[in-house]
Image (cartoon, rainbow, N blue to C red; front, side):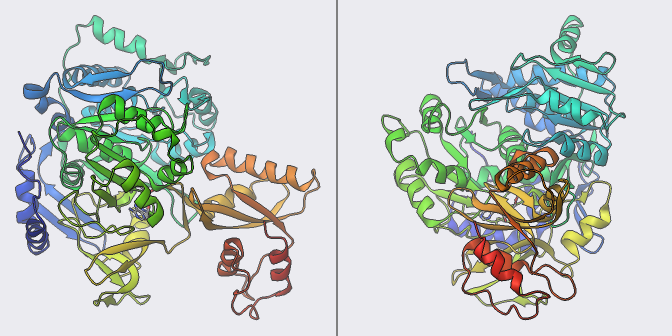
Length: 637
Ligand code: WT7
């Protein structure tokens, strides 16, 4: 069996792209035929970017889990749906066939229902990278609950903010997670988060690390006990809830330029069709292939290309619990060798960190099963691109550089593996259905090539963000109000003479640290929580491995300890408020910040100093106190 809607040539790509833009209804209506619906749609697309209101396959009814699991049972019951490699290579890996996945998702859907979860309820998932996380995600979708996965690196405070924003009354977690040499006590973090969330009714706890947890009577239950009850009842199938095409499927929080993360909402039908279509076309996935996406399910990449894309295509998705450097820097290569991985999809930061170990860890690793390589999350520098091409792909595997965002649900700009040309550091061409434009500061469209501009999208694709949870106006102002009738990505891009796009990075106050999106305002708020901190300003600077590092300038008037200790205290505060992923790489204590007479911090200057470009600071005469610049320059870390 092959996939009927895979693009097979550059000419076909050009034709499909043209058709998809001229007649999106016909184009996506055709793709939509390949899914299982409970009721057909009345219209393929209705939209306006003013409100915004975007509706795909409106009137249709479906359940995404029937498309990701049930419909594959006829031919693929015994094919692995999920292969799981544990953190410790000496532990056993696990394999879940489609039949086993079906059983487990149905069981856990019953567990959710037995614990009071209903259609439309928000369920928060805070787990490590274990198959039960995928099972819980799918079980939520099966009962029609809205999942909100929170990455394991977020703090109790971040969790409690998200629980309150989504009003989640249900949590699924585990005792702990393994990450490299670390054992992270997830349930303890949940317990801390719940001190300020008394509305949470139920916490379901899966045993993974078997570390001590406190189970609170009436609130906390063990996953295993709950599943046993369903087994005793004879494991009945759980009839998949009927969902409207535009019912929300999940919320995923992401950072913007304000201090508060926003809950990006995706809906059932469009997201399903788009993740499936992009999975099959970008990677050119072939039946039976093993797809290894190294992202965490706590981010959009894991949602779309570990779970929904591969499973809706009846593929085999490899999930890895650990980190690329544990027990050594050859771990990815061992996994590829062990499971004969065909597609490796990872982040430039991982490639750069592995590059630093040289070629030793690659010795005696058989990577010949690889057919396609992919990158995502941040711009890839040419050096890393060539290393990936030469040493991992052995110059035989196309590299897809996939540009997209939490808000876009799936890949928007990328070459198609082996079908459309690649160009190092370029995401290249838009997917069918995607109409990118570059605009200048005033919002005028730039029509010529060899130009840079702000990257916008002209019309909706099926996995367009629908709203920001609980605050539609925020969705409008953030994405649809900067430029009239355009979706604004927040990224800058260059377009070359062939029309290929090269993403140059964020043009707003959002940082991309190791592929993790962090708002400068968010980090500043966290630093300012520390007693003794008067004010702070956070900027990004180029970092060899992480892509961007976090540089914090802090005015401190406390008395507690020497400078080094104060820095540690500030770091600990950020870790406590946001999570370890947001800890600044550098903290410089300063007596003042460069401000204009109207009190605005001149970040341009701080950015230049952090970058080390201290000779070209430009005009500083408009500053309230220009002398502060010299002090900051001298004290640079
Ligand atoms: C931001 C979105 C999309 C999943 C992972 C990140 C940057 C993403 C690329 C790429 C250059 C990229 C952009 C974007 N980005 N992919 N291939 N080349 N930059 O999702 O956390 O929502 O972050 O990541 O700046 O806006 P996210």
